[in-house]
Length: 189
View 1 (cartoon, one colour):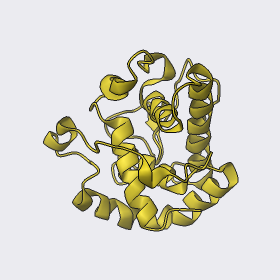
View 2: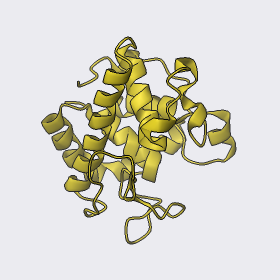
View 3: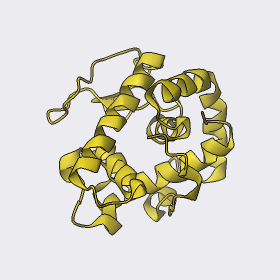
View 4: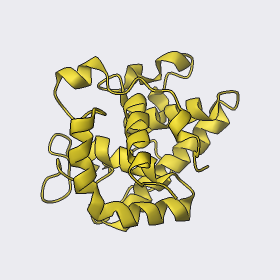
């Protein structure tokens, strides 16, 4: 699915927790810096999006949220605060419940972007199977929460509180808000 209706999805954006921690959030000043850093990956993001039929703005949004377009990674490609997540998309390298391998590709490569995007696609498919009665938007939000927490922690019985299990209580909503921004900035098929 390409999520062509991304601009019409509802989102609360960054939570109060995210804003108070003054960490990256879906507010414009934060995103403008990410947009500048993201430009060096735009060709790869669009290429992967086209190949996998996944909206490039979603890919860019995850890269923005997870690594500030690479700005928060150490020299080896690991998150400065999380030594088990790797690369622009912060793919977990030690995942016990994951059906796909999360190997260690080059942190800033097209292959890594492909790998992180493929992980998200698997999560979307899994969410569609688990909750076929949910809207496409809710399935995507559930998959995004799964990307952050693992599918076993997605509160499937509380669709209005999907982000309750994410660290800053806003992951899926912040990703959607970021994706809407990046779509407006040319991250589309």
